[in-house]
Amino acid sequence: MIRLLRLAFKIAMLLAGITFLYLAVTFVQVWMASRDDDARPSDAIIVLGAAQYDGRPSPVLAARLDHAYQLYAHHIAPKVVVTGGKQPGDRFTEATAAAMYLHKLGVPDGAILRETSGQSSWESLQASARFLKQRGLSRVVLVSDPYHSARIQGIAKEVGLHAVTSPTRTSPIKGAAAWRRMANETLRVAAGRILGYHLLDKERHVGKLVPGLAMLTRP
Image 1: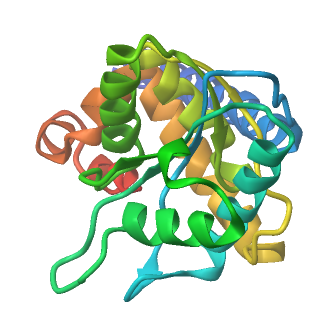
Image 2: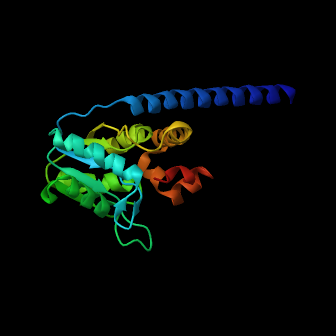
Image 3: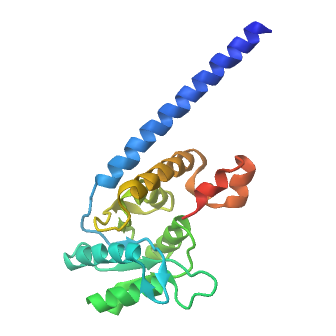
């Protein structure tokens, strides 16, 4: 009995060590991705959505859109895809607010494509991939906050996009708040690589697989 307990303890410690190492490596990868700007000539720029206030982008979304505009102005891609649906009671989708903002900056309406149904990063990128492929487009530059880069690139690969990331450097999320987001993203990336980002996005399935893991599926 004592031998079995010792063996179980050793196995538990080994598993804990492997888990810690996996999370540590993933954290470093998330951090490195946050520092990388790999913008290159592509078919389209995809801006991940964030909160909007009655048609006005939040500071987080505005920072992403400002960066996307700079990429567009430097001819990185001829199309900008704005993403994001709306919350109950909202008059505007995140994509609509983003499109209006970009239009005011000088991006022609014909250069803006709208994904207006997504409620998560996976949903937005999956829907964007669908209509981009219908146009024969697949090479994209993803724009979001730095901490988000590793996960959205993983999702993009899963939905069949050839993606690089170019995170905004003017996000209001900085300091301790940014590090907390980085830690959360580490858990999401770690889980997504094992379960698949599509499965992770479906809370009802994730909750059955690993109790409490559903919280990791939120945008």
